[in-house]
Length: 242
Image (cartoon, rainbow, N blue to C red; front, side):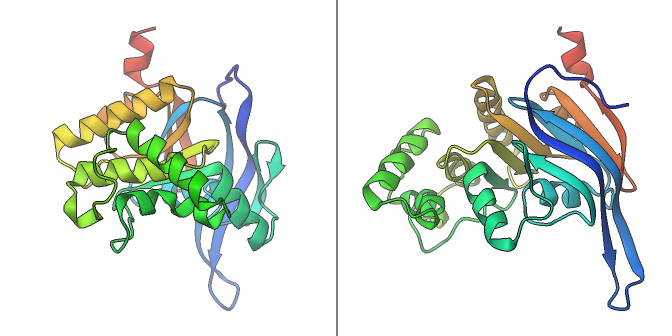
């Protein structure tokens, strides 16, 4: 049974299935089956599971990069499942900030220009997007690296640029896919502390991870197995500190 949460829902997923088929229509893999999930606004949720469990497929659907085969996905009350590509792209650009394990920065652009990119695609004027980009880069302690390019930064600095880029459009949801996977332990811990701070400020964060220690920092852990929700609980560390 899905646990109850008191806050206003940001995400509601009902009876969701994602099936991939061969060209002849036969089922290749049932990646997700009968997923029911509610994410409260302001929650910090970890999605966990072994390779092939369906966690990346679920994250892609929540991030509006894919659609369910069946079922409903409501983001802030809007049914995303049946939107056309244009609307889906607009929703993705305005409401979701992505943080990737591999950073996905554009090597030819400066730090400041990389952070401006989401606002450029939203049609924000140069002066405004520059001002907003500088503000979020100051927030992640990189205001002295504005004119550097990604290859002039450490891994931790690149990930902080990626976080700034995710924040610049003031999204409803931050999606983080193994955000410390390419970082050493000390640098990864600094990134996790930054995510803790963002959550404390009221950000909704969903993170894919295989690391139990990272999951212990969250409010809630959803574990997938063979395309289904195996468990949905608060982590032990959270329970013991309440």
